[in-house]
Image (cartoon, rainbow, N blue to C red; front, side):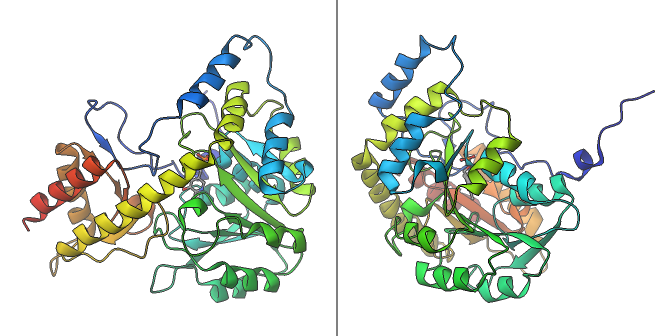
Amino acid sequence: MTIEYSQRVARIPVYPAAAAYNLPEDVAHLASNESPDPPLPEVVEAMDRVLRGLHRYPDPKGSALRSALSARYGVPAERIALGNGSCDVLLALGEALLEPGAELVYAWPSFSVYPHLEAASGARGIRVPLNERDEHDLDAMLAEITAATRLVIVNNPNNPTATALPLAEIATFIERVPAHVCILLDEAYIEFSTLDDPDASLDLLRAHPNLILLRTFSKIYGLAGLRVGFALCGSAEPVQAVDRIRQPFFCSSVAQAAAIEALRHQDAVAARVEQAVIARVELGEGLRELGIEPADSQANFLWFALPVADGADPATVEAEVVRGLAERGVLVRAGGALGRAGWLRVSFGKPTENARFLAALRDILGA
Ligand SMILES: *Cc1c(COP(=O)(O)O)cnc(C)c1O
């Protein structure tokens, strides 16, 4: 007799993890859209203070963090969900909304965790191709919404393409989505976008109880290893639903304390945005010198097609370049696993790391 697992285990795709974890220290980690800067000393101190109280469970309601987020964003605390990373909220929301017979609509290529939602729930997932500028095609997404649709996801800026839509277009889309559909606006990278004020989407929550803004401490706040994210919701219902679905203690006391402290340092957030905007320009120029035109980035990474000779296989070219970069100590993400072979996603590192990436790519392409 062998153990039999539920069918959904076979259905759920394996997350395309970066092959980064057993490498020497001088590697440039440009594969996971992390911050190149370590946590602020004040954040480390806040975590340190909590360590001596770890014999106690965390506050299951995350009251202090939720009230800090409420003060920062002007959203009532009962409309804020916390999670062990924002993916935790995302997966719980999928579980709360989806089941066989239900439908989920999202763009593709987009975040590699979204396909997990349909696989785990048995719902039907509908992937709507990005437009020719690699942006969400919101009209095409609207056309896929039916009476069975429970959830539509818009990732703005979009991972892996780095492209963003102006908030005005998203607001028009939200107006047109029927009230029975939950709209998840995944804003993991919104702070990096210069298209609109990153907080402008908050206004939409007032008019749309079916809207959820998903945000994270993993990217601009540089706390990816800690696992803490949150959702700002147009009503209290989704918060109650995701809290009911999960285990009672999903956000550690260390994560809660660090997040509260991180929120106090908006000057550091602004400095990181500035760094990213500079990297965006410098890496973009460097790629153009190699004859590569990246997609228009509003995030902390670039997405671009590798030059592929006539008759060559994009997947082979991609694999060779990714291996060549790794041999030169630069880790990037291959596009094939993210939905498009022959493309690369490169996160912004420190200026020296970005320069190292460009030099390595120039070397490999023989330019
Ligand atoms: C990185 C990322 C997240 C954040 O995930 P965490 O679980 O908060 O680390 C969410 N959505 C997208 C699109 C991302 O790229």
